[in-house]
Image (cartoon, rainbow, N blue to C red):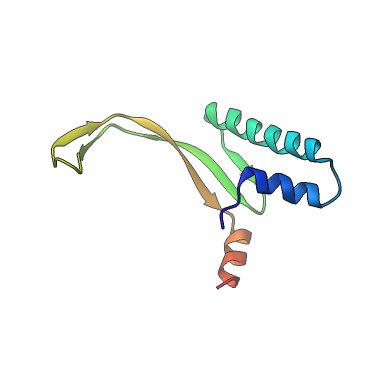
Length: 95
């Protein structure tokens, strides 16, 4: 099952530390801070979880999968994620 923003709010609310409204505001604020940081091209590092980075991709040649026609893909920025060693170990133990 996918972890959604709504489920994050529910899990935070279930800890009995915040009201549902406060939980929603906290989650929304955290994601807004992360979005603004990435928009500026800065990294978001969460210790024990991982690092979100913005990478620039150069213009490159590609192919339209429907027609096979060659096309030029424009340059763009993408967000990448690299998990921390701690998270990687926990994921590996789950196998």
